[in-house]
Image (cartoon, rainbow, N blue to C red; front, top):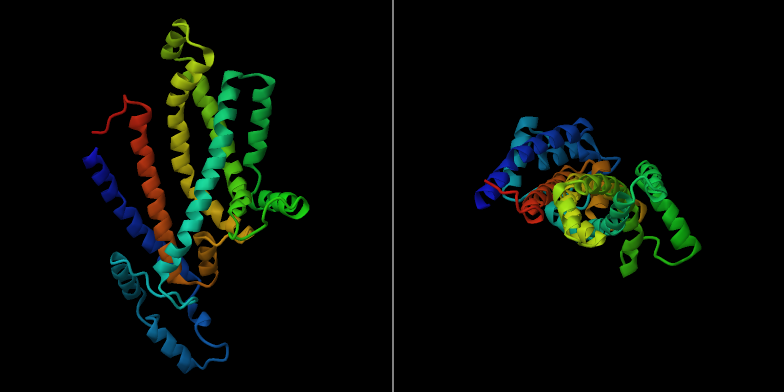
Length: 305
């Protein structure tokens, strides 16, 4: 197990290096963020001094090498907009994003597990038909539209939940449901397909032949094997969850890293964007590693060389 983990950790390095190149090029295509550092009426001499102070007067290759050399030691530079170190800014907002991500996954699992199992057990029934239609429609529903509708109904009209911010414990409900519904539509379809396949396996028929109750067979035998597909999709959807949280955080004024990243991109704040994308990329890679390691727990037949 340990050699496998070490090998996976080493495999994270090349993608991270490629990520720095892509980010550096894309952010510099839009120009330098000098305009956000000087007064609108600044003279060319003042602009030149600012460019020299931040190293923007250096060749692009030299700027990239200097940026990467600092990243290696955890220094992503200073935010040109907030005038403070970039990495602490991102890490300060990260708990809010992780809280929203965890709450969204909880909502998705609470919906997907019972609905997916019931749709598989009663496949081709009216319930299965309704689930298929609902998940298809829900998958095509934009996050920002769903969030605005939930806010309009439960925050403005009914006044049951806070509309924005993170000041109250219940403030996480609406943004979590907004993201969780989209994830649940995928998980329900995946779980239903996996359960239908598992219910036709020999070990399930053997369990039924022993006289076990139907729901004992479903929950203790078929469901555990089917969860491998669910866990895999959760790992694959992690990047989408983080990307979706950027929009949802802006809609609900949620003070997370996603909202900070959006502000940084609009301001062409290279240091904050680099720090944020690096943290998100590492988070996605760690989640995918944990997903792979969970396979051996869900199915003891899976071993890691």
